[in-house]
Length: 188
Image 1 (cartoon, one colour):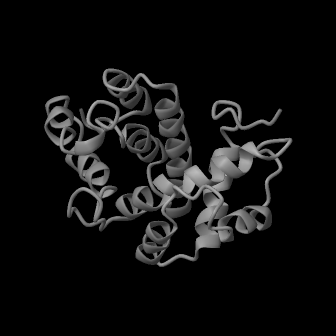
Image 2 (tube, helix red, strand yellow; image 1 turned 30 degrees about the horizontal axis):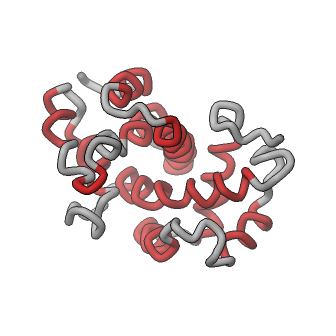
């Protein structure tokens, strides 16, 4: 395959991922990656596809995450740059594939960040639809809120990108707003 499309990524992911929350996470990361692609003037659909596929082996191999990704995706013809981006989101956690490109650094950063954005949006009457950066940053600063999301890792990613957390969060929030319905973040 010359280029990984979002449709293809969804098909491939569906062969391994069945749990609703993991599919929703894939959708969140995909939306965030599309927004990051726009920010960098890159191929939006490719970045969305990589976001959708990033946890391909997680449901079946949570203890060996990303150890069962490279070969199957290569056999399916997923481009090497996309496979590398997926592997790089595990940098320092389950491998030593250091994020180097903007796509790799973005995936590394937004994977965890979308969890905090999603949690913050779910607490709001109108979900993410009217969420402002300011209210998100209050949640961000509260270490007990969405405590399982790795803030130091997110900040490490922001540093790799040469961006402030506020700027990355603003992009991610907008990207997720654009997909609010699909992400079930329109509120009560």
